Amino acid sequence: MCSKNECDGLRVVLVNTRNPLNIGAAARAMSNFGFLHLRVVNPFELVFREARSAVGAAPLLARAEEFKSLAEAVADCSLVVGTSAVGRRDPQHLVRDLREGGRMIQKRLGRDRVALLFGSEKRGLSNEDLSHCHWLLRVPTREEHRSMNLGQAVAVCLYELAHERRSIPAREKAVLATAGDLERLTSVLLGALRASGYLKPKAGSENKSRAAAPAEEKIRRLIRRMSLSARDAELLLGMVRQILWKIKA
Image 1 (cartoon, one colour):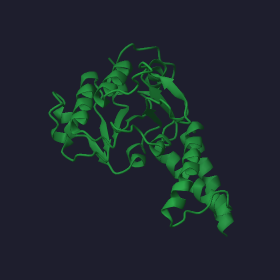
Image 2: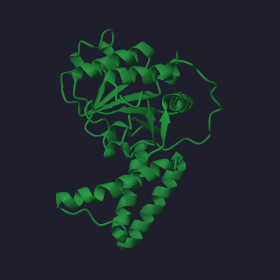
Image 3: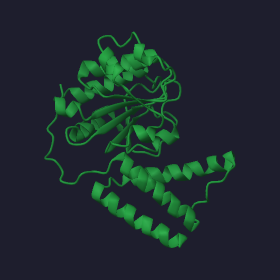
C-alpha cells in the first residue's frame, strides 16, 4: 500500500458522472486503497452522497468536493492525467498504459498533487476535458471490448497506484506549475494571440465560437506538454502580459 503522504497527494476527479451508484462505487474503491480525496464536476444526480454502493466509504463520499468546471477542480494540481479507452478517437495526447502511467504517477505522489480524471459513463472525457490533461492513461483491455464500468476502472487504476511499489528517485528541485498556473498562462496567451490576429476574436455566434474551440484546445494542450516549473510559468506569464500590453497600447 502507498504511504499516507503519497496517497494524500492524489485527487480522483469524476467528470459529468451520470449514475450516483458509480460515484459510490468509486468512493468505495478509493477507501479500499487509501486514496481519500474525491472531487466531482457537474454530477448528473445531486443525491450521489447517499449512494448505497459506497459501502464503508460514506465519510469519504460526504467529504467529496463539488465543482462547476474541470478547470476549477484541477487548479491546484501539478499533474493532470485523463483516463480514456481511446478507441477510434485521436486524443492528440501521449497515451500511456496502466503499468507505465502508474509508475510515473507514483514518482510524483508525495511531492506533487496529482489529479486522475474519469469521464462520464456514456462518452468518457470530452475533447475539452482532455485539453486540461498533461497525458492520458489507458487500462489495457481487449480490442473488442475497450470500455470499462466507471467504478471498476477507478478500482483497477488505484490498485496499480497502491501496490507494486517501485523505487522513487530523489526529488526534483523544481516545483512544477499547477493546473491553475497553466490555465492563467493559457488565458493570457489566448488573449495575446487574438489581439495579434493569430486567432480570431470570440464572436457572438455560437457556431463561430465552436469553430474557435479546437484551436484553443490545441494551445492549452501545448502549454501542458511543456512541463513548466512554477517559476518558469510565472516568468512566461509576465512576458506574455507585457506583449499583450504592447499590442493593445
